[in-house]
Image (cartoon, rainbow, N blue to C red; front, side, top):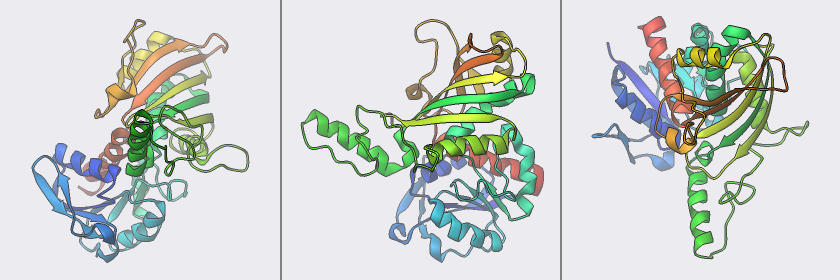
Length: 338
């Protein structure tokens, strides 16, 4: 049986990846409908290597007959149109931040808490977590099962693609401007991103943290364990694709480096590449276009009795967004509606 699939936000970076991944994984779709704003109506977007789809206007779309709608059009747009799609009978998998912390909406990384998908029936909406949260909880899950993580301290090094196509263009344009001695223009970011790092992702909250940092805390506790303490510093770096994280984890009991490596290597979606030599680790440039979450630099924290340090990288557009959404859809079909 084939399904009718809609992809909202099809002209964006994540929407593009969703369409490519649906094609790559031979998703059981009889029809895929590409949706975007009215300004993009009539444009063609690629679906796999040989096919193109004509973009339709999201605000005109009648979702009757659509089985699954994969949304990535921005939080405000999802807030308006995702409930409309669900009311028409579609099951919505939303990649924006709008529904993530609503208690009756499952927040899912299939390898970590795939059983939570069962809660889709309440509102017919499933939320895709934040990109930086996805790769971290995937690495934490097998370790948490071994020794129960109590506290996580994470510093992120997040690529500009996490802020969309305009942000990627800004990094390119600023880099070129610096080389040819033109003025550097800032629009997508509050400070120059080329040859710089910016310790702000999303808006500031009253306690001095940013919303991105709050997301990593709140989402990790919703997905993995409400008792885990998470403190994050999220930084934008001049990399086009691929997020990296330096993660310090304190456990309830001791866990050896060898046991940690073995547990993560045996877990679906993770590859441990950890050689204590030059090039014995994975960087964002190397993970771009890859589906796995890569873990390197696994080592004891000598300042804590049960602490480990990890270096985690992943393609934020794939596992950090589009792939995770498609995997939710695949699990939905195989376990619930197939």
